[in-house]
Image 1 (cartoon, helix red, strand yellow):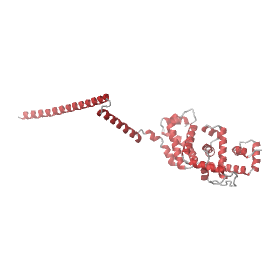
Image 2: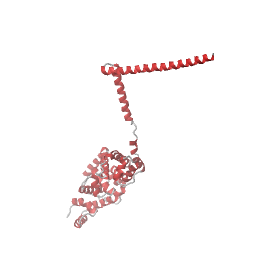
Image 3: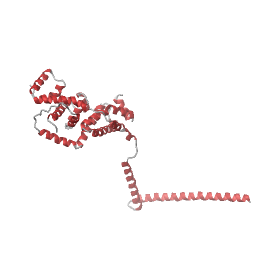
Image 4: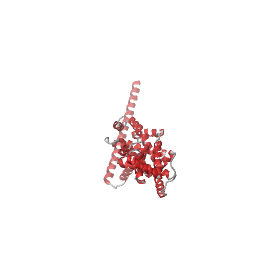
Length: 178
Length: 154
């Protein structure tokens, strides 16, 4: 079913349309929330809050706009708001300050095997704007142009931010455990 | 020749094969001579390979929670918070009515309230009188019918 028709049916209170919308988008939003927060319980709450927002504001959605873009912007803003309200970001800032003070020379700790939990944990230390882009590109598999369109960021900026995010994340591993 | 900063700027494009042949060979030359950049390149490639592994299935309890989102909206029941407000408004109105009725803060309102109460009392008395009349007429008709049957018997 076309997204436009789905939204119209949703506006008429069609429960089946809501279930179809969830089937289409809930896993995507959950994965953004999970990798943004690094915690499955928090991710479940964030995902629920995002869909409550979507449900409450679906009437305000303009049909000439892309629904995916609208949804991803809600998700992005909610994830960042949640992160900022949460104490975690303070710890991360402290970590980043400490990190920048360290000796710049790289240790010979090339990643041979990567523990996925460790990788998800390190992801939390990336700045919000870089993290969301990296999640969409390298975890969700969106193209640069899709990310640029959905998050309303110029294509060049999207590419350079993703490159910066990858380098930062790689350096977290090269420079050793925190 | 490219330096480490330029290499870092082109890293993703190099990995994703988006560079020209000339840029590619420049990077390869740089990587051969720079241990730090080589390490960064290998780590970045490994991370890009591993990141899709962080994708997870949505948990079933969350799926069910999301399905229930439209339901509370359908129920238009009064929320506990709204009940508090309704109780507060009713109490305030009752308090104000008492105040205006028993004191003479606002003579006009006081007069109107007394007139209303007087009207209600009048109506109550009238209704009671009417009720009594109906009752009496029923007793009277019952007495008459009893007397009639006694006379017929005699």
